Image 1 (cartoon, rainbow, N blue to C red):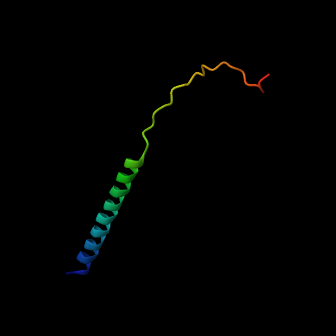
Image 2: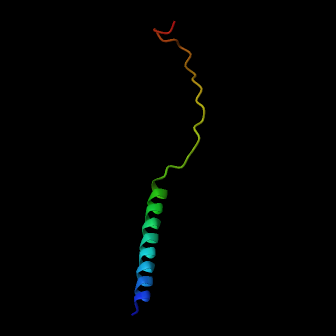
Image 3: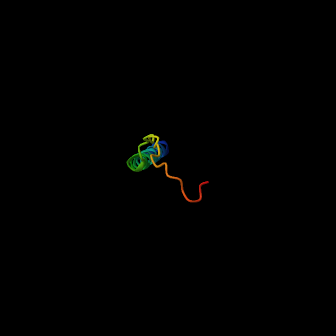
Length: 54
């Protein structure tokens, strides 16, 4: 095994490990990410005045 081949294998293995870790992080982030749903405007039906509201 030549030195160049060893370096290429080392870089290739490092890239595969980095890609696997990135895939795992993105998978977990996608699972725990709450889907955005815009909140509907809530109109208060309660028209009573509180005791401190003058």
